[in-house]
Length: 305
Image 1 (cartoon, rainbow, N blue to C red):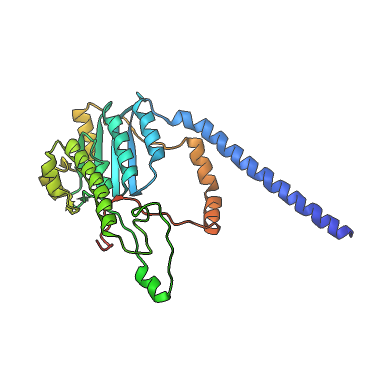
Image 2 (image 1 turned 180 degrees about the horizontal axis):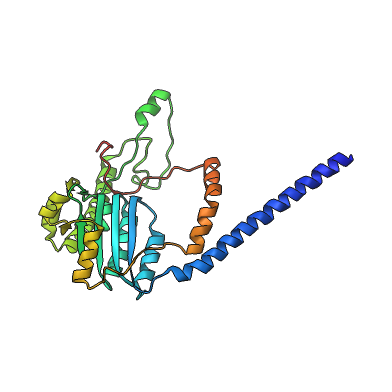
């Protein structure tokens, strides 16, 4: 082996070592900053704010953080800021229940922004006071289950499938063939059971007769002004109006700061921010699987109903 080859190999080894120690130093510095800054940043008395934005999917971290916040005496109230068309039924219901556990111990207000429909409307229900903008889109009480069906296309392409199932409903729904009448009946029964759970949540949250809620729960959306007339929200207003209400009705001083709900520690947040470019790179090169659609409490105006 020539001298030039040896030098080249040694240089590459040195670069790998330098890269490792540089990365280790960055991680150590970020962790040290998080440890130093984190505990000092929490005010003694504050109002916690939870943002619910975009499609609601995995809410595990939010649920855990809300349960922690419910037992934190420094967090005197909760503002739930909603700008969401809804999402997965289970995720929205879990978030609703966690907010309800907070509401059992301290004041909760909800503030609807541009849209708070379906599951986004559901998570507002435990609040003692619900605010919306005049042009907020809200309501859309109901659930939907969508499944694609490609049998016509498959037939044209000469593609067939063999299905071995333990029962006639095990493969319902299936994109390779239309729903059977029995399958449609059973799935509709499941959807209606979830729908009734949604109606009960609204009836309890708004102190309304379930029959009245059911009359409004046909999937339609309302403006904030319409929702006010129907008793689905309490007042037109924004976060400032919510803070004023907390000061007047719940005796929470307006001077107390707002602290956004942390779903992870400050150290974890800093580490996540530092490694975000690497995570994006991995996502771009790794296969992204396609999951089945579950039942959703989601307003989707662009989709055929």
